[in-house]
Image (tube, rainbow, N blue to C red; front, side, top):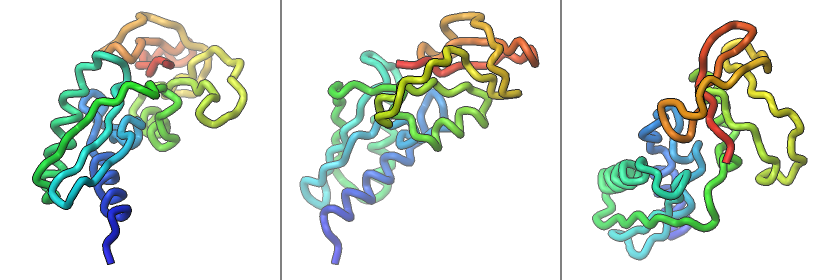
Length: 166
């Protein structure tokens, strides 16, 4: 027997599998921006999506991609609702998402400790995703997107993006 809950979980998984338009190495689930799915009836669902920051230009692409994926799965009417509260935080990025960022050569944001309930880390350094050194320097507060900064490792001299903490 199929329940609404199992359908919602399946649709949530499908919506979460959409690649982030600015960082396609991450899915929307990895990024932590898909907040939920509500099934109104078999042909109509609403997906709740929180942008990484108010005015994020990628929210339109994310919404369109979610609609396409769910339409392809047979859902006739898909509504994507932008939810601003609670606000997204870099603590919402999953452990898998942080691992993917590092493998892709982007230093993940430092955890604030609030999502896990743990202590706030005292280290202010950013670890190089190439060699692991914490001896890095800021080159520019902005990189290819507003949510990233450009840094360079003092040890290996490689430049890299750092996903800024929010």
